[in-house]
Length: 113
Length: 112
Image 1 (cartoon, rainbow over the protein chains, first blue to last red):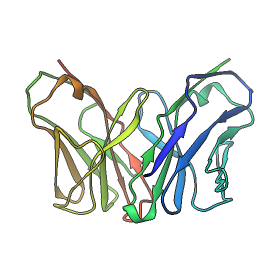
Image 2 (cartoon, rainbow over the protein chains, first blue to last red):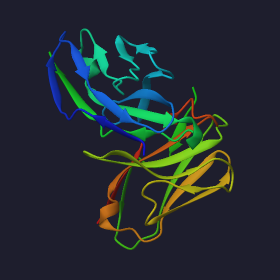
Image 3 (cartoon, rainbow over the protein chains, first blue to last red):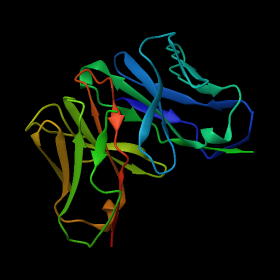
């Protein structure tokens, strides 16, 4: 079946530190991969996406590269800010399942000044 | 600005009550989804709908039903609320191919 596994949180970093949140997936077929972010008290927002192998998604200083050989889609940011504190979700969709998203368990990030 | 609107941010209901959670989108999206979010479990799909009057079970449909009488509105129904349905409920909509996913702000339901 299809599934997503994320590194466990919470992750606590100091401002300007480097961030990596690991995400690996299992999928039948060729998935599209996504990172969503949930700020406190809000719904989820799309952060970035990649639709095929070796694609790099990027937004707001965050990046993730679709690695088919390692079935991974790790989220990175070179210098985090306090405002990046949120819960981050990795997700996949497989084209023959009508757009359903399958989510990882979420990773809470806390950035301290 | 396009939106998915959930009718309530917070709800408190008693065990055994019938509960309606409403979701409305203004983007003319074909697909609509209901997820529940629990700590350590991420988001789990309850039900989804590809079209008016159409519904399909997700991964955890037990204890829930849905209604989609109009394209823009997708309702989640708890026929007889139980304490294990205390959770955050998130509605989302998307285009038919799955892109353009937009989430509502969520309804935090507490069943006492």
